[in-house]
Amino acid sequence: MAALYVGPSARRRLGSGPMPTVFSRIIDGEIPGTFVWRDDRCVVFMSINPMARGHALVVPIDELDHWVDGDPELIAHLFEVTRVIGVAQRAAFSPERVGVIIAGYEVPHAHIHVIPTDSMRQLSFENAAASVDPAELESAAAAIMAAMD
Image 1 (cartoon, rainbow, N blue to C red):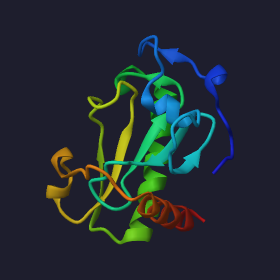
Image 2 (image 1 turned 135 degrees about the vertical axis):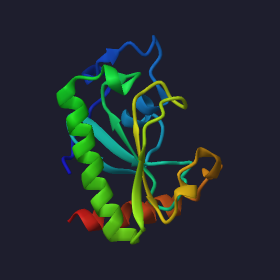
Image 3 (image 1 turned 135 degrees about the horizontal axis):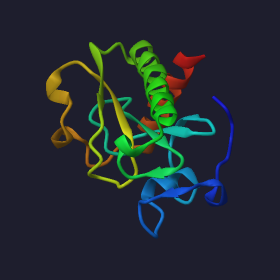
Image 4 (image 1 turned 120 degrees about the vertical axis):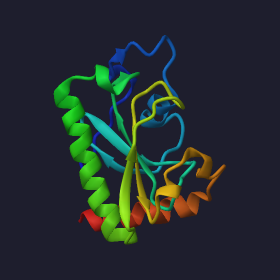
């Protein structure tokens, strides 16, 4: 994982509106986030409304509303990072599967949900926790990062 700070001056806004998204604010450190990956194109942080332990979000640094509008090289990079995170989740949590969802309705900033699951029923936003203990997010993040080493 590269230790790279990408602040507001380094980000391009790609049609998501005049105000930064909540994800941009997390990336910039204005809002706390529990990160497991950061490079010059994307970050991965833990979901604060997880469907399962270890639920992470892969988010491009540049604001992009709809993932299909992204540069093909960026989208390929996001999916490779998604794969790396999924492999780490599989090692850390021993789920039956690692599911992936791209919905885009919650935040107008493209993101990929990467979710360790034991059944298809877990892959529903109706199952998302209303809140989670920050210590649990840190614990899950530590397990993912340890599995990437």
